[in-house]
Length: 333
Ligand code: PBG
Image 1 (cartoon, rainbow, N blue to C red):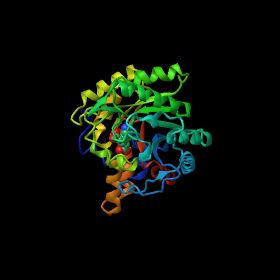
Image 2: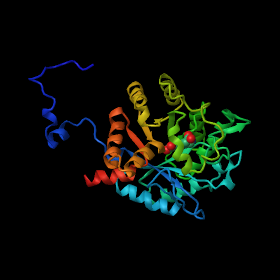
Image 3: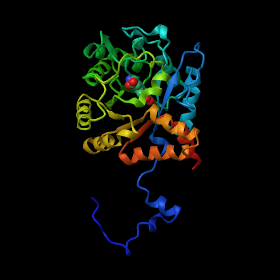
Image 4: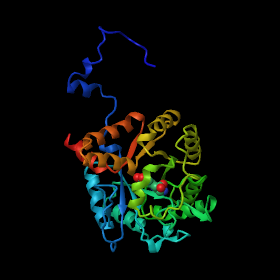
């Protein structure tokens, strides 16, 4: 609670809100391009471009288009990009072997982008859902998602990405024990400087729907992800997840989704004081875009307000599909 320091009429909080200069002077948080990570969808060259209907304004890029687009992000001052592949159905297998093929789309994308725009940090998502015909993040035995067997495959996936130039390995799979295993595998292969950003508190959320359209896994997904992703009702459990991942060697932690979970970001940041990222996920982007396209919201203002809210809640950085648009807007002033 704020202690009351004075009372009306001596105290009038509206005074400081009176002019633009004054509001700028007392602003507690400020969004900058430095806070943004841009999630990029990749597609194979021979795959025709089709629109991502549920994510207006987002496209799946070929590797060479992504090189140019990440170059543009760099010009705008965006520090990092995160890559997600749309894997052709013919390459999806139950053993998810495509995930650890050093010639897969992600590795080709990492090499090309790192070669052309080395100053941008590259984040590689580690999970099996783009490669699994059943759309799950892990290996299956019947309907059960296998934990320890999945972790072994995730280590191989992390290794090929690190070899290809990935700066930050970002496991989004929610298997137990994967951070320690991936850290050990990276270190053993001489990648002790490759960071790990753990999707530590990742909830089983309806807000991932448009993303699954974008990577082509939505039709495939059998059942739901509740046996590995967190229950939206829980908060203490998020702190437990974060504590474990930090003990296992995570360099940064992430909370996901973002807007409905700002309380979790605040608790994590206050409790641990470590780099804390938020993921403003596809469904959050879709809601704002859809309302803006209908003329129901001022899309630009809603975008900036939502991103500023992440800063206020304690996020150090935000993964957002708005990254380019927001950086352009921030540059224009
Ligand atoms: C997969 C993964 C997902 C997202 C990022 N990595 C989807 C899921 O867990 O089903 C969602 C991102 C978004 O919705 O923008 N491991």
